[in-house]
Length: 348
Image (cartoon, rainbow, N blue to C red; front, side, top):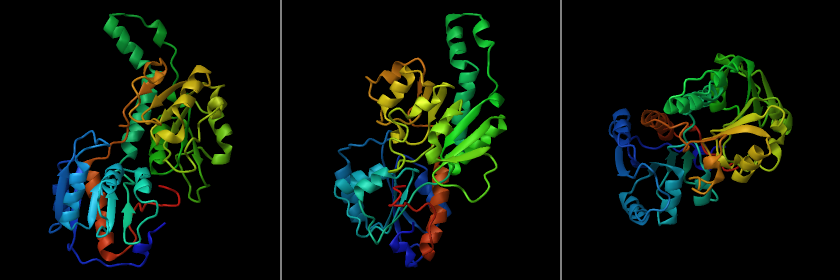
């Protein structure tokens, strides 16, 4: 979907714009100015942990209001907080997110303002996330965590590690066949894995890195045939809770390992714990969780078959953000359709 404001092809004067960046990425303003000489860029630094409830938001909103900026570059939850604390968006023409997710935008703006276009990061994650997924699979299949524990205990024993599974004998199912899913499929195929994809709709184009692609209505069949299932799904009305309840019972025969590098709300924490304790899945590798940060009293922290990482499988680089912004800025100036426009109907 293209926002109405962009469908009218509004041409903007070159460099007659002010960009506000709200980010811990200290190199970002200079990278943007190096790519777009003459563009005014004002940076407001925020801590690397990007806290949700900061006493600085009202002050920051006031400063942005006084800046006469018409472009904002930050994370969706930061924009949401700024709006809740008094940011006036009447003069803002374009919001460029520094992440792929967009959930908080729909809280800040239940309906997209006619005068604004919202774009997100749609590239730059796939390579990192493919490395993360394959790294976790290799680590598990080759017993790397157990070997590290043996080393700490000064134990020399091979018997536990002899029975290994080659990746070439395994099947991975990827929930989501977009750019990130394709990268993971490509890396998996490089190790000889059989690759299945699950897509919302059938693709018209050939997808050479997938052996088979099924649709959402085939989810039980899809799950049943996989040694690993990896979700890269965004958070949408269709995907929320998609794997919750007893859905993962379909994994019982193969004791599938569940990996989540997409959005956490594809399955709730209780459902993950149930699937583990019922023996439906053989383990869970969770980079994304329904409630983040994961509460300290969650049983997932200490479950022997669970790996927890703090939503870091696909960090976007400063250079990639600057590249995407530069490309979209050129389209913005010419009034042409921009890349990765947020779709308010699909909520992504």
